[in-house]
Length: 196
Image (cartoon, rainbow, N blue to C red; front, top):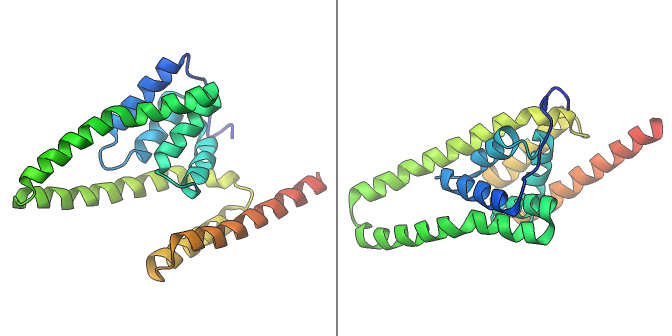
């Protein structure tokens, strides 16, 4: 962890700073906030290490609801308890909600225009690129994973094949592969602690 996180971690000074940070994060995330969240929380603010971000994101992805909102709730709770969880979520949602409502009204008015349809198709490619970029950026934190890099990559590939190729329902893939990954990690951690 020392090599990945050379600077000491900090914490938000107040709930106001937490709200402002998540509002700013939400406003930067056109097409997807995940890449921005990693940069803001780990690199700029230094509230989380890369490994902590990956762990929280993994939990956020298996919980119901939007991943980044789940992540905001966990970060807010970590620093200020339940109050912080609500404040971080409000920061993620308040201004973007107003913008989405305005965009929906504009879209309803101009949806028949070919330029609007083309622009939306282009944004899909941008969103996919942001997701891939974040995945590559966070891959380095997998080196310290209890499962080891080869098994982690294998489980990720199995998940991709199950969902993208075989089109299995996400919930069953997460329950099945997630249970296998948890059991393997528990077994390896228990074995390493017994050997220590």
